[in-house]
Amino acid sequence: MSSDEFSLYDLRVEVVANRGRMLCHEQIGDYFEVSGGRIAFPPGQGFPLYAMAALLPLLPAKQRDTAPTDWMTTDSDIACPDVHCGAVFRISRMGKRVFRHSEESGEPLGGPR
Image 1 (cartoon, rainbow, N blue to C red):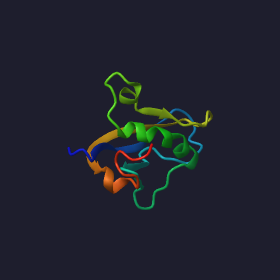
Image 2 (tube, rainbow, N blue to C red):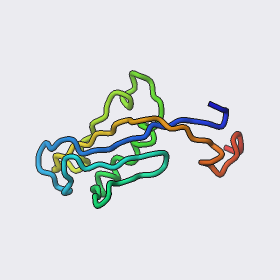
Image 3 (cartoon, rainbow, N blue to C red):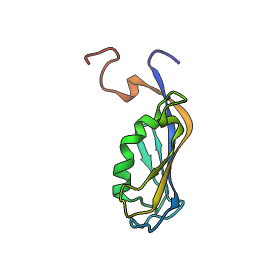
Image 4 (cartoon, one colour):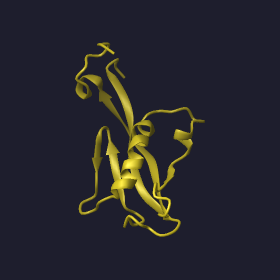
């Protein structure tokens, strides 16, 4: 990679289990995908807002390389943030993409911090 390049994992966030009542009307198999800074949904499918709000802070860390012993590397299942809901979401790392700083940031590389 050139000095301007970095890589991120593409992610798939999927409803994988029901440990009780699904209160947000999600279905096992519902998913969305993350590539770079973009989220994509399959045509005609939504995703629970509050579950997504809880999952969003984890996604940038899951996109990056982490140590093999880091929980961000080893743990992929996340319980719904609603304690009364039984949904379980899985964040899976898919392929890796290379990005260029110059195409993803308005700040020059090595600029003000």
